[in-house]
Length: 595
Image 1 (cartoon, rainbow, N blue to C red):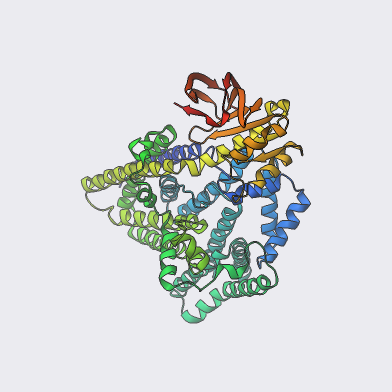
Image 2: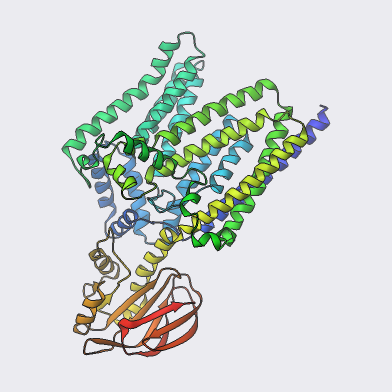
């Protein structure tokens, strides 16, 4: 190839890489936009938020350090990270909470893309971000995408850094003892930091063993090299396990360690749980879970933010395959072989992460019961497994495309088009399954925001309600009393009483000053405030109903009270109360239908 043609080819590849980067950013933007109202989507995350609002910074660190110690972890870094999380939560600002949830996730994805791009090619690194975003499923089973902000992503970030530093340590054998020692120490620090975040990161020891084994094959004294390279991480792992066993017997926090019943379940249940938790977020897996639901017939994949994801994914997948075919066609065989070998190694590491990270949980009868009897089809480790699966799949796809790059152009063009079509369909299916879980993700956040924001509003403060019935709110961990404690804390008022039993409310309402019924329409994220003005023979009366939405929008409400009904159309401004005057003879029979 002439110098001029080579220059033109490189320029074309550069343009295509820029297009791939733009398509990846478009897909990422669509995903983040679709999740703009999804954070703290589980009881544990909301509990952390509530606690953060009432503690001081010294309390944060003391509690986090004590918690880590009582879980068998002697560490300084993680309590500092958790303290930063609590400080951000204590602001109560929703943008801060959203950033706390998603910046760490993006950081981990970017780190993996950077490492993959550095070890192979830039476009393969970008392809990981693209396909990770495209096939990301968000479920209701304590998904790390919408729950537990920062904690686990920090652990995964440190785990990946540790592996990368270990590879750097192995590859620097000829660059002096001091240089190698520094990278080894950094790897050990990151490895222990990940273990101190979450016990399941102990499974990374298998990846370290794989990398040490592949490296020793290149050396003369293979067994000795393998032992020497792996020994430091093995020692750290053993020390960690010993500390966990000793300290967890002395201390106890949350659920006692014996309640988890390690190794108490049957082998069959362990295998079923292992497979279920490991594959819960495998690409397109959740489409089977939601197949047949109404949302599929409603063409959920056509929602605006999800169309953005699909457009970016479709264009990006086509461009990515074209770049790989173009580069593979002119690449020297030695370089192609080197890249393919790295893809195999990185892909195998992803396979190990995806297939083993949920193993510790599967050995617990506690989690086996959750999966088999509780029908919890996924759990916290499932999200980490997804990272591993996507590393494996992207590496396998890049490896295959490189191997096929010397095929005639019509065949490679056909393969690129097929891949583009598969990505298009896969993105649409993923969008549909994600929309099905809207009520358990975004819906949870909007409900919590509505509850908190109304009670902190001027309307609530000015009307001085003393008794509030909230039948649609269950409280943290199904403890309704936490709602009352939370509202008293947020409003600074001790004279508020909350109940969630309608019969009890009917019998005691007029014993309080300004009683009020607070209803919530979860499907449309609208709250209805009905003040009680009088009572006669056990029947409660009102003269108005107010509507409140944190999102706002145009609504058509059908108000039904016994045999009487009326229809009103309202445009709700986010965070602003809209009141409709109407006589209600029996509040308990009053219903509102949002059309």
